[in-house]
Amino acid sequence: MKRQRIEPIYANTYKKLRNRSRRLRFFSILLVLIVIIGGWLGYQHYRNQQLSNYTVRGVSLTQSNGFVDFQQLQHQGYQFAYLRATSGASYTDDQFQSNYDRAQGSNLELGVYHVYSYTTSPKAQLQNFIQEVSQRVGQLPIAVQVGTYGHYDTHYLTQRQAQEKLQQFISLLQQRYDKRIIIWCTPAVWQALKQSKPVRYNCWLQTSRVADQDNKAVFIEYNKNATVKLNGQSQTVGGSVFNGSQRQWNSWVTN
Image (cartoon, rainbow, N blue to C red):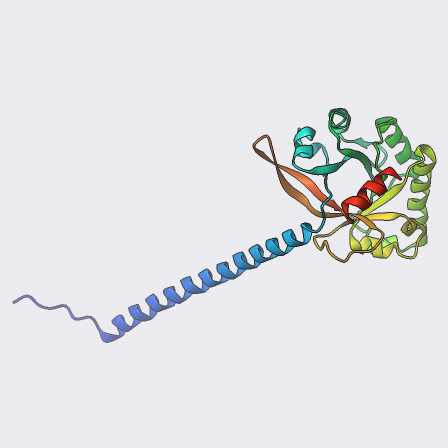
């Protein structure tokens, strides 16, 4: 007679507990994933609802965005485009001149922008901008992008010397081109500039929170990595909206 193998009771119990633990772990991970995905989809739906209240959409472009078909942008309902021209006293965007020339074939309202540097003089930055841009400044106000990096943070921007240097660059830019200026920054930077002369200008806020923004916010960049479909291909651009109605846009552009 064949001898029957009998496993100890504790061995069966251990296996059952181990299997139960694995199932619990699996369902816990699944639940977390469902919550994360659901939250992300809910946020996307909420933001899309917010964006639907802003009919005037536009893009900001740099050399990292590659070749952009401006006619396709226009056909998809975009109404303006901002092109990076320069940064600091020496950097120029490789695609600026090509983008600007090709955009002339569309009906998009065009603007150009400069990335402000804390480490070079306002006059040197202006000279770099003039050499690259010449008279290619478009129809929209010139934008000055003011960011933070290293110890050049929002606290630094509250200092009088930093604010005066920024104001000097903006004044030089206005004197040279006789155009309106927009400060492009985060809400934190804008708050740091609240008590300074640059706050007299309108702003372009970088924030995913579109609704209920400062009344001096002309544009809102809701996503610096927005996706658009151009000629059947997905392409990344900076996505922005005009903070107002179509009628207000038409009036603002012609002023």
